[in-house]
Length: 272
Image (cartoon, rainbow, N blue to C red):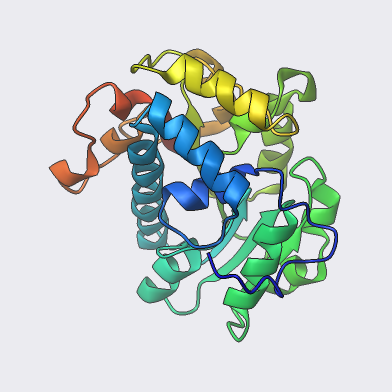
């Protein structure tokens, strides 16, 4: 991480780890701070496979995005997008179809600041700072309205974000509100930490994360609970599966430890 912190927005507490920055660290990014790296390393010591899980989720993003582009989707909304790093959504889709437009949404100040720096000069992209529950702020943002036409199909991404949404927020209802604003033929790509996968250290890793990141608790869910997010959508084959099992390109998409392959669920579905 560079010692030049001039890009950090005023008021950002860099002493408290954030999900976006810990995830960036696991992916080998440079947009993280000592507390993020310390928590990331502590979790890696408990559950070494978590870095593989992050990598598999990134690969799923690429495969699902290309699936949508192949089916004519040219506009994308990425909720909880985190810190841009190599292989981000706009890079993937614009390489295939330069007319693709992407709006990233995150509430993390540092994630948004980095996004603005990286996306500068790319007229087909924008970042909106908002909580995922504030759909009006997201859909009515000037940049969203300029780039996305919600009368046409949209590719909606919610990758490794909903397991930070507690049950009392009613995450199924939140996803339903997004669905209701999308045109038929839109896609939803979703990944979520599994409460059923039990690789060594997973339960302890979740507890450790929750203790160290009190403002961003993790809530793994069962297969049936994650399936509920797809109400009003039709899952495409192979359905809701372990992340690397969603249309893998090669054996390299899988972790060496079979149990780790089931840690994130992943699925893609079409709006009815």
